Image (cartoon, rainbow, N blue to C red; front, side, top):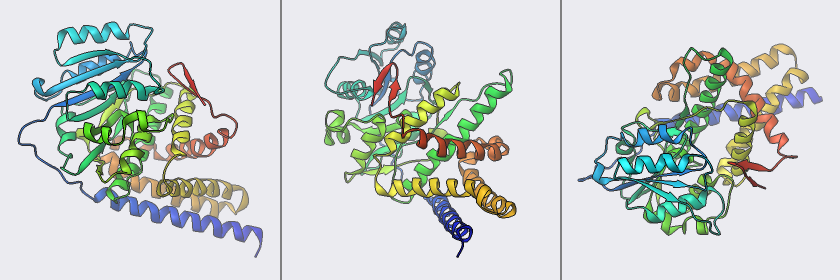
Length: 375
């Protein structure tokens, strides 16, 4: 058997695994997470860690103060992590206007990074349930109510989706296109997380839409016991997933948050680098999914150099149609179907980010977040 034939069969086998896995994930998205109706609305604490967020924190607090939730049952803690801009003043202004908004100045402890701010806020929380989002995010008025309904008596953690905000038509075409590609990326990645949870093997969640019982946080020892990671939300997810508590990951518009899109390719690289480095700590079941995807992308890209053009195009078409089939569900549920026409361009974006960034990490493993450097 020639080298070309061997490569053909490797690519065919990888793509077959990729298609099979995607169909399995689509089945995972059909699974419904159980819900629970509380006799009385419980006290909830919304935690936001903020560092130098003067341009974003006002929008975030505007959305949090408009939550459709009884004010007397709402507790919002904004943990200011040594900001050097006007972040503290803005938070304190809202705290003066809304009794349920609290400002907390983060003290230095042995806990590193963002986890320190979250840990202090959780210990101050009045609520039985902690709902986390980020300072550059806005939430829907239905967010708290719809997240809470997934807390059955055995559920300890709820993950949900966040999508980048899309600019108006007044913005340059290149800016709007970059935002659409980011939105497709988040649609795909977070929906995979929801699908895995639906299959009973949760693989991860994102910290800007991450809710848990305060008792569960204390049970795992919080960030004082959780090993440091550049993706502190994923580290906490890993700790909770190792307990007997259930994890739900609803994929629905009502629980979706909005974040500010990245502006430059350099920002995208930094974000992807942090996510991938954090993902190296994932459990085997999550790593298998990543490896199948990586091998499939590399093989189908090399096919254009190793195989006849019609064969390479056929492999690429199957891969793209598989991704399109998967994306139709989250795009529909999250009311983003208008993005479907950009899927062919997203394929090129996805190939570049999935293959180039991991390769670059062989030489660059330094993470810079909010002016802090982690190796």
